[in-house]
Length: 167
Image (tube, rainbow, N blue to C red; front, top):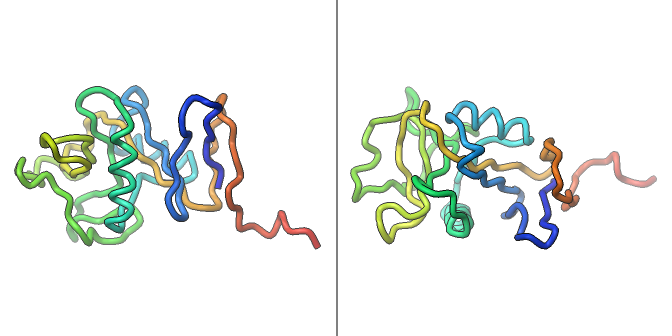
């Protein structure tokens, strides 16, 4: 997997187990569908948070970010005919809704993860209209590459590909 590595200006892209995460700025944010397309260009998809451990990891990562209000990121959870499912096709197995704020309220069919709403609650989910612009979180699996080019240094962490084997 290629992840951007910092050149002394921060920690670069965080990674957890077999995935690298790209956490966008507010300026990079668009609609849910546009953000999903951007993640696919990067070699991944909007994040599918399948375990409490992964949720805690991402919650902790967004606490390090300050993107201004509303401090929310699109994630890969969408409501369809069969209920809430992640973009990887797996069902929602644990809930981190902003229940004290009445979520899910039914005002949207996609989900954002909030930095700190309601007050003193971190990393909770809110359903919104997919037409609203928000920042986003991509999950890029091992073996995929971020395809954009910029000033960041790319580092090969683990590439499970026989092309690099010597015979």
